Amino acid sequence: MNWETVEIGQLGEVITGNTPPRKNPELYGDYIPFIKPTDMEIDRRYTPNPEECYSELGYDKYRKSLIPKGATCIVTIGSIGKKMTQAMTDCFINQAVNAVIPNHEYDNDYVYYLLKNNLDKVKGLDSGTSSGRENVSKSSFSSIEVKVLKHLPTQRKIASILSAYDNLIENNLKRIKLLELSANISYAKFKPVEKLALQSKAEYLGRGVTPKYEEGSRFYAINQKANKGSMLDYSQFKSLDSKLEVPIEKYAKRGDLLINSLGEGTLGRVHFYTGKSDEFAVDQHMSIFRTSEIHYTFYLYQFLSSSYGQGLLDSLKKGGTNMTMLNISDLRQLEILFPNELYLKELWSICEPIFRLKQTLINQNILLGEARDILLPRLMNGDIEV
Image (cartoon, rainbow, N blue to C red; front, top):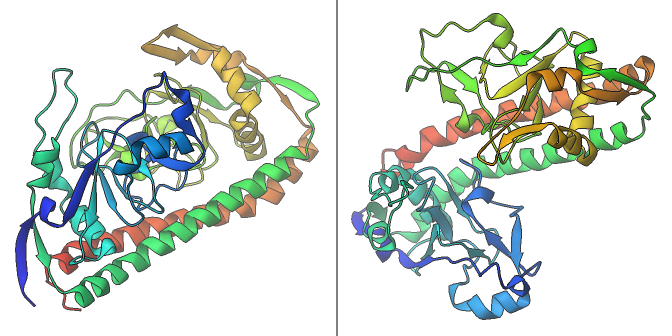
């Protein structure tokens, strides 16, 4: 097979997105997805649930910048070199994203994996802005050189091998979402009868460790960016200084409730940790609620995840616009209505198998992602023949 070096701009058409003015709300609606970097998940192929959509008016106004299904979209302002997605359907993107629409010489899925394999080159072209934000211009992005194989049948074979891993990951993520929904339905059947302060049930309720970082240490901390609520985004874990002494109580343990407690945006987001105990430290920007009576923690997770529970946590916010926090003393005194213990144990007996399966699927996805990432450069560089 003959390999060639081409620029990204030669793969097809490159389109930069835009954001309709907020003063024109009629351009927003529910007609067609509008994908922004904040919607994308690192290392996830698709973005199935963007926060916003265009209306039909928005579609008509911006139809020339429509991104077709299968195009590859890469963030070039902000989190560059980290986030990308492949369009599941026709969509629009904002100005922080460039989309590559392949021409007839290239398979859509092959181009996605080609660009994924060269994502670090985007980071290397950061020109910066006056505000300090990372930025790569459209012309610079389009001029990035990549090594390609101009043989469509082989492109499709390579893409199908790698897609098999991502398809399994996506299926597992759908199953996880259904498992969470099942647990939520079970939770809704139980009525609270007793008001208790969090401190009264906690064996430990405090902040995580003050971090010191060291690139490549493989000693990781869970931080507020990694907390996605029902899931943890392992790609957001930070590497701690290998010499940092972390008190044993500041390691995440199975059954802990982790609460984002510092910084606007995700303040109050909660996660029920079901991974291995003492594998990861917890960052000081998060609070840890821990009790050996795991049925209390699970109910608390369901309650604080609800709109009512999130409202309670929001009412505890302190500080200014750019630095809000949940004081640990306020969390300790927060009163929550619990069902009686018999019902709590019954709820956990129903949901424990659900969350055990959920963690199994999460572990499978980690292994699938690792296997895919080992194959990716070897297939894209021709080290493995197909």
